[in-house]
Length: 555
Image (tube, rainbow, N blue to C red; front, side, top):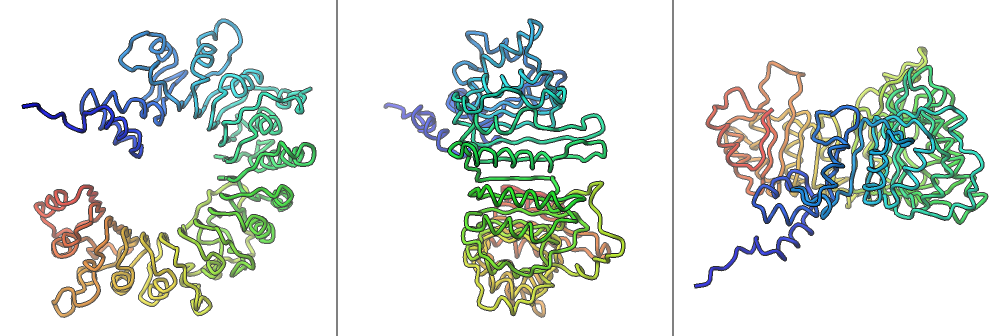
């Protein structure tokens, strides 16, 4: 009798499995441990998707390898890593001294000439560049097939005169690299590195990489000693784009994603926000993704004008503010966002929720407490008392009668950080967003009853803060469970999470034995639980909870 081979060991099945499967680092690590066949079959996808950490001066605690060790392995004809047969595509270069001049640095040059053409994604972090020509060769010559380039917190040891390369014939740039679509640079500014200016002209970068669609600028710190900060660099970059637009418009890149992370859209002088807004208006980029930070002196009209210019194409918006930011006086937009799918705001950007009237196709709404970071420049004048104006949360400040007839049928995900909602507010929200699938919000018994009754099709819920008693969770009335809408009505729920705050330390808000057995255990689709247990719950209940669900985290 012929023994049939397990289908999960047939090469063509394995090849299709690991080609089509969603890549998750943990999953593929486990796949490689199943057997030799699985390790070999998953290797090509592993090399394509996983990042290889190559360290320079000193080794970090993260998994990785030093450059010389990696070159030695790469040059072996036969090695257990199959580095030649299945080369990596993504490299994380960290803590290097990048100097390619002279024989002393021949291994580094060999690394780039050997590995550079294979790279599709490259991140160079916390490294030192000593020569502007080295930098230009690395970016424009040794890595011709990059799709993504990230420069994180590097130091450029160049003279000021070296920053702008002289006598470049921009019209003569013909060796274009059409693969790069995402470029990210993160600045670290302190008293020792006070000039973060990009070491080559932005115009040169855009002309060499005409297909760039996503641009990310970050700034980690601010220093009083800095000659150039991130927002100034942003203005330089936009000015160079404007030069391309007016001189050689056919070479202007079509930017769709502009992320200005941890740069203040304005700091002390509001003219800089006006300059940024004017450049963006002139460039007319078809932005789909826009992230920006707003400083305390930013003019509302600049932000509104910038959003209005791109309203027709924007799909994702993220705006954050400092913690002491005074909300805009705009209650709503006078223009619509027909294609907007995702909106993330620090709670103080707008005073209420009336802005959703102009976002009929919104799918994801996130309101955070504060998305900005404090800096030396952010402040509110002492004579301006903002606290009465921002008292209460954005939901409580909303007059829902002005949203009468507005229904966000496409909205699937709502996250409101740190806000406890009562029955009336939840009634309003469930009417406004009837088809929600994922929810993060603070609830008490009354609010949860509305959720269980109207949002019964939820798949994921995170209750933060959690103010629900056992009776509220189980719908108990005069000791009879399930008399009101309760957790068992959430029959499609796959994920349940709760977070306890310290506002009432004398009350035990944790899940009881009854809430677990008569609530969570009755949800057939529930697989992931993050919860705090009551002090009265015994160890065997804890063990059953862990055994029942595939993923459990006990706070």
